[in-house]
Length: 375
Image (cartoon, rainbow, N blue to C red; front, side, top):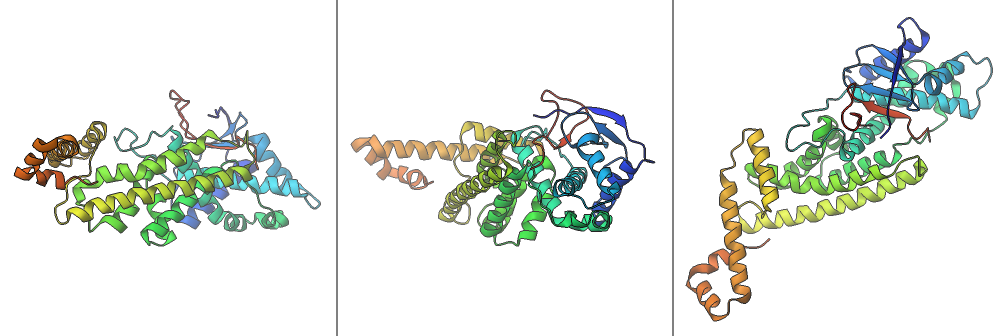
């Protein structure tokens, strides 16, 4: 996990500050969403290009970002491809960090949340910020008239270190569009508008609301959310094992697409099993079978949000009876067969089931056990 170190404050009277502020303001206007940047800008002293900190400040690396941009503005002749690309990457970085400041972290202590400093959260947070950035970066460059000062800046493209995260998140969102029948814009808005630590639940909700609303009792949502979000968390979280320090961004992007395809396939299989369960039971279906660990987690979630879990013990008893009946039918001989004939059959029949690798970051101001960062 990359570290950050805040250096000297950059005064509002400087060109560097005014350039950063113009980008933040342009992003806010374009998106119609305010940011939590407190208008305090500091030098970033590590190899990270910049950070957005939870308590409001932003840090930007002077050597990697600010100085190349100022040189590009001051150039008297045509800029080369490398210098032009460096200026574009700098804008992309500030837009990315602004996106972080435009979203809430959420309550990471909630029992259905992912940890803010986990790999699962990192992949979705950074991947979606990159996706949001790419939607508007060219308009932002035009809005601040940077294309007038650096004419070829629209002609260059940059593949950033989070290319794998971005490809993975975009692939999953596209899969949710296909599964749910909702537009890509609706799926994106549902996930992007959710606090960082609840975005996997938002993905599950897209599926629940579009495919299970007329099958599943509303009080089962907590359990089904867990089942649907688990393959997404596992697959997307695995992308955190790869970085631009070890693989080129183009290869990371390919890995992200492959990972997204696996995640969507697993989600579809899980959804198929859930639909089958609810269809076979009809109007008053029981909960799906759960392990004791899953049951305890569902109970914690429903207690946390003040929702009743009255049917959890009933579901546990029914699952126990169904399992016992199945075992009896499988190996109980004549006695088991007689028991089923005498009245145990009901229970039995119910059982079916390109920039620097460490270039951009999102940081907390107060370090935690892992430096308190969701990169």
